[in-house]
Picture 1 (tube, rainbow, N blue to C red):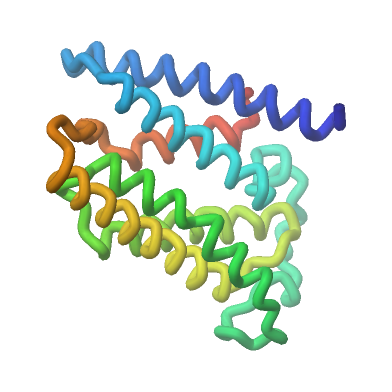
Picture 2 (picture 1 turned 180 degrees about the vertical axis):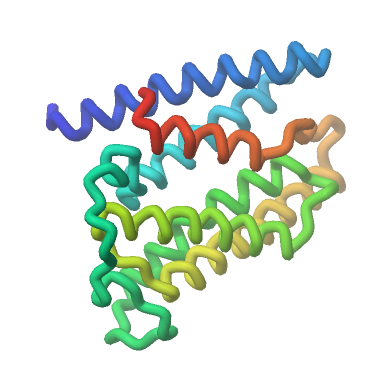
Length: 196
């Protein structure tokens, strides 16, 4: 097996295990008994976020320590669609963030609004794009826009599924009572510090 794949799987496993511990701590202190659905949702979001960090080469503390303090002008693109159009890359940017909107729609369900999906995609993408400046990757406003669109589309899909559940299912899955920003922040901190 490829060494890089082994590192990824070990990192994912440790992040899932640590995330499960955090979830148990949150639920115990709040006095909440979580269903299987809620545990699967929590672990699904953990796996997704960690996978996105890996795929996008989100910067870590080691990258930040090696950073020279200078940004290359080629690294930053603030003009929308100024490069030649690469439809496949644009499609990948949208598809990468569809699960975020979908998972977060399930997370909050009745409290989920379309602007929540859009803002979640925007801020998560912004976190990634800004961190990539520290490991000499390209930060692009196109990625920010397309990732936000993907989260928005995922949120719409999630809303449609929840609407269907409300109409047709006798017992629909319950949303998680925790703020998902806490999980995202915790995962980024663990990723950034290289604790895995």
